[in-house]
Each structure stands twice: as C-alpha cells, then as structure tokens.
Image (cartoon, rainbow, N blue to C red; front, side, top):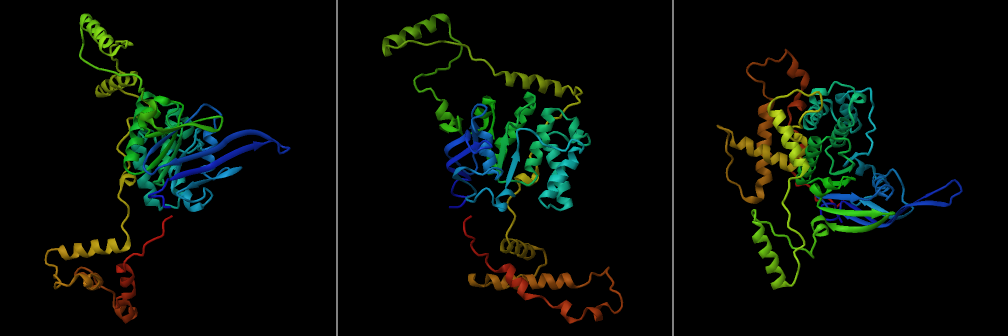
Length: 398
C-alpha cells in the first residue's frame, strides 16, 4: 500500500506503557489506539492534558517505541531514516538556540537536511517573509516573544518542504492576527497536497481548519470522524431570516406548534465572532500605517512550498528537446513515426551538445588547448544520452 493511495499515518492497536524503576506499570499513556490520517487532509488530534496526544506524536517521530501494536508513516516504520526527511515537526515548546538570530536558525536546520548554501538562503528569506519576521530577522531568538518564537518554529518545520507536518499547539501565545495567518497557512498547505496533523487545545482553531478530528481520553480513542458531521445537531433545525417583527415571530411560534406539534426553542440575533471584529480593528490600524515593533503581517506562501514536483530525467529531456525545436531558425527534423520519438530526441540532444561545445565568436581558446584536450573531449557520450531518454522504470509503491 503506497502513501499516495493509503493512509499517510496509521496506528494499529498502538499501546504505550510507562514503567517505574522496578518495571511495574505506572502510566498507560496510549491504549490500543487505531488511527488513520489520509493524504492531503488536516487532522485534528484532540484531548485534555495527559490524554496521550504528545506520546503518540513522539512514537510517530520514532522518538519513543510502542509497548504493543504498530505505527506506520508513509507505510514505513517511524524509525526508518528515509521517512524523517519527509516530516516537519513543530513541538509544543520551541527548542531553539536562543543566541542565534532567525536567519542563523533556519540556516542551521537547512544544514541538517544537507541543503546547498544558495538553497538555504533562498528558503530562509521566503520563510521569514511568510511568517512575518523579516523585519526582526537579526534579533536573537531568545529575545522573541512566545508568539514570535512559534512563528520561527513553524518556519523551521517547513525548511525541508515536508510531506507530513506535525504541529503541536502551533498558535499558543500568538495574537489573533498571527493566529488567523497560521490558520490560513495551514489551509493553504493542505490545498497544495501536504498532510497535517494538528494538536491543539484551542478548539475554535481546530474547527476552522480541520477536515476530521480524533478525540482521546485516558489514552483511548473516544470519537473520530468528519468535523462537520460530529458537530451537526440533527435534533434541531435552524432558520435564518432578515429581521422580523415580534408579531411575526409569535405567529411563527404558533404555526410551528400547530403544524408540527413542537416548540420553538429560541429566537436570537446573530452576532459576529470576536476574532472577526478584532481583525477588522487591526486592519484599519494597518491601513493608517501605525507603527509597531512586533511581528508584521505574513507574506505569501514560500515559493518552494508551492512548487510543482521536480521533473524526472525523461520529462526534463523532452521539455528541453521541445524548447530546442521551437526556437526560431531551429532545424526541424523530418516527421517520424511514434515509435521513433527516442531517436528524434537523441539527434536533437546531440545537436545541442555539439553546438554548445563550439566556441562562441567572442571566446578565444589558448594556443595548444585543443591539442591537450584530445579527441576524447569532443566525443559525445551517447551512453549518457541513452540513460536520459530511456523511459523511467516504474517504482514500487512505498
């Protein structure tokens, strides 16, 4: 079962028991947990303190070993090193080096993933702009407020462009503006195909962004399902209309009682959410360009997070060949049957290599350079061309 079709995260009878020094069972943190997280969804992992959420996350990261049962991430064991490169993790507490600034912090985490220097710099600037920390990027992380520390923590969780993002209380300590930006970012990342597991005690945040939720209590799963289905009150019917007079409301009460034999539970006036009202006030202040020393509004999603998957060898070759054939003045090859596509591509590649090997009019080679190079340097390595245009073999599902 591949991660593309099967669940990204799966636990089967997962159990974790913490024992004391004498080997006696003290705490059953996770108790026979069956769980699946589907590709591309935002899954809310809920429960009171001590319900087993963080323990489950640590098992999925390979930091703890289960006592019984099994856990799989991308259909592999969590201890598989290849899996870890596809995961981004924001812990409940941001364990950052307080004497590094934001750029140095992201550069450090980029080095852990063996990214080239230019790529680290590119991603660092994009992420700082995305989380709204570009203006304070040179300030030491230890001087950040808790909300700003959560922002840089989220940036480090995205530095490797993960397929699975594990977020433990991502909006803790954030102001309402930052909270809304993080929620918008989570929805956007999910839209781009990333799978997100969100642990939070802020139920309003979970309700806004999650597709499904699972609720733990005492290490056991107590509820699981689509959030809209779980929150729907099937025993009640709600009708929203423009403002009605008291007389009309009374007539509606009587009509419902006569026709249905039921009682109108209540008639209220809708109100805006406090979050919406707060954001309107802040937006007005920003339009007036009032100064602030805190984090700024986040920028667009980092380009590398929304980029299309990199082209494979044959795809890249075909795109280069197509571009060469479409250039003005390019020699158009004769029409070939469908089975001869690879031969046509090989000829075009050889022409590109040979034309690129010829010196430009402004370039002058040193005397004797051609003699030293020898005929082998001018020869086209057709084995490389064959390997490039050879159809890529189908990979087994992970």
